[in-house]
Length: 312
Image 1 (cartoon, rainbow, N blue to C red):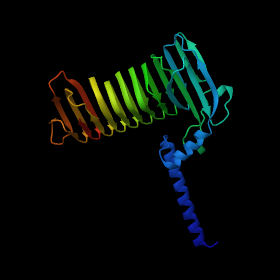
Image 2: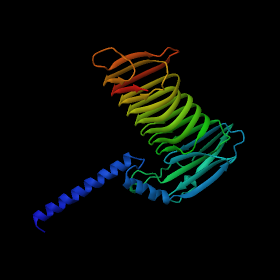
Image 3: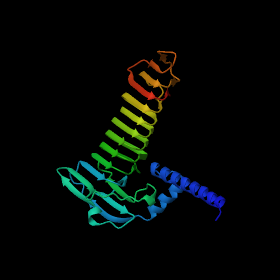
């Protein structure tokens, strides 16, 4: 084999290696599998999941449901059945130590894996090989606490509860349905927070590295992401909203006819609005406004590096 042919083959293998590495990295970072290739891989793995454990838990006097899994996608939906149901599915056969356990203390029930072993395969391109389905009776309206250290949390039906707390350390928080709660606290340490409709007296949303997007939000609370964008369309602001971004843009859509007092500042960026804002400098990165006749809702928005947009 001559030197020229060796060089050609070497270049071809380098191109293949770079392309494969790029696909692998994209698949790991994009856990949702949004591209066609990774969606195919995800669907293929989904078809291989089989039920490893299926248990019904009597509701009785339970006023808080705790679900904690180290490496699983968690799917939440309501049911017209009288009991809580938990289904654990996996692409491989689990040992008893890898299956979930149920414990009750006072009026709380806790469902978690007895063994902290993580079910992950590099050949799955960042997709988890386990799924937990939680079925909550429609008559249940108390508290819910969900935790996943590596996986997505998804609500796939309308739900109305008391206090909701969700923490996805490395994954997305997703809902295409309506969520109603007295108070809600959602944290995605490394992932996106994407909701269709949410109503809550008090909310707190945190995304350390990811975007926050809500199509319809009612209530008062805080929105914060260290690195990512915030896009929220408000149906109602009951008292106040605080939105803070370290590096990213903030886009807020305010209900028509709302009276509010606005304070906005972006260290590196500008503020745009179809409201009459009072700019404090020529750079357009600090502005205030008092819109309407009161009583006024309070809107405070801040981004260190990014733009702010507020409109109706």
